[in-house]
Structure formats: structure tokens, C-alpha cells
Length: 106
Length: 121
Image (cartoon, rainbow over all chains, first blue to last red; front, side):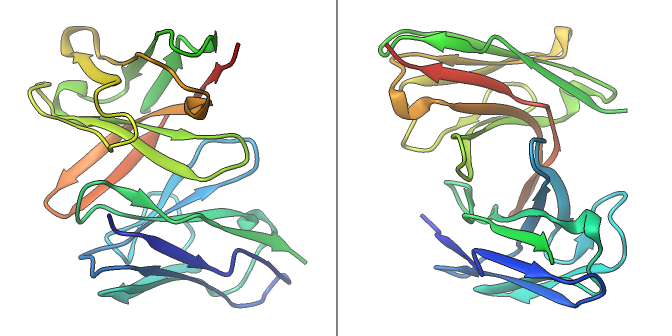
């Protein structure tokens, strides 16, 4: 099983600040996918195939990485970006998720 | 607009069974792999099951293999999850999701609002 480790677990950012969330895989994966989950709502696909933004995702978001190290970056934090972000690998079964990074607004 | 609406959740005793349903609309259901993902209270996401377009192939993690069965009815645009021998650790919100099955780029496109399952005596 591929274990995904996200860091940090929790963080707070000020409006306008640049934010980087990290996801490390225990074995190499071909792609990483990211989901945003706002409080009390269901998850939404946010970034797929490492760097492609899902429909409706603002272009202040970006994704990058390869092998075992991936990241999600917000160029300029906005209040609506406060949420928990999960990474997910689909390279091998069982499909696994990271434990999430809770991003709060300062 | 893609819509996935789950139903069938509730309180069930350990060892008993429950069947979840998901009604899909807004896309050609029969063309898509589908999946279930769950989230225990205040916890992260866990993949539960995936099914191919025809229903001939199914996939499960070890945590539910042999107890849960995913199925679909393409004529009704519906997805199901039969859960048997339920345990307290199965307590979670269960999400129905469409599943992009593209080689190693497997991910969950669209998600329902979720349905709560509580396993307790």
C-alpha cells in the first residue's frame, strides 16, 4: 500500500500570502490528485494529474511534483481557500488518500 | 449538471446489513466507472469500492473486501453498496463518486453530498 504523508497538518495564512502544501508518497506514483473539502461539505476534485486544475478552480492554484514528492501552491491566499486539502494517488490499488492539511485564514 | 444523490443510510447494529443507493443524473452514467469513498467522523477520506462501466470488474481495499459489494444498474443510472457484517469502524459518511479510470491517473471527478451510516448497538 502506498502511504501518503501530508504536511503541514494544519496551517494558517494571511490574505495575499503564498501557501505551499506538500504530499509525499511512500513509493513513486505517476500522478497526484488533490481535493478541497470545506467545512460541512463533500470533497471536490481540485487538481488532477498533478497539475491540471479542475473546472472552476481559480488560477491562483497550481500543482507540481513527480515521483514521491508533490505540492499544491496557492499564489495569493484568499478567505474562500480556507479548507482541508487531501492528496490522493491512483497509481496502484488500494487507492489511498493523505490525511489532509487543514488550511485556515489568519 | 452532474448530480449524485445518496440514500439508505442510518443507524444499524453491529453484524447487521445495510444497502446504500446513489442516483446519478446529468451525465451518461453507463460510460463511467463509479466508486464509494467514506469519511469517519472528524477523520480523513478512505476509498471503499470501485466498479467498471459494465459492472464486470470490482475493486475493494482489504478493510471491506468480503463484506461489502458494489453494484450498478445502468438502466436506472444507479449505484449501490451492499454492506454486510457491519462493524463500529464502518461508521462514516459514505460518498458516491464518479471515477476517472485512465491508466494510472485514477481519481474521483464528482461527489455526492454523502449519507451517514452509524454502526452501534
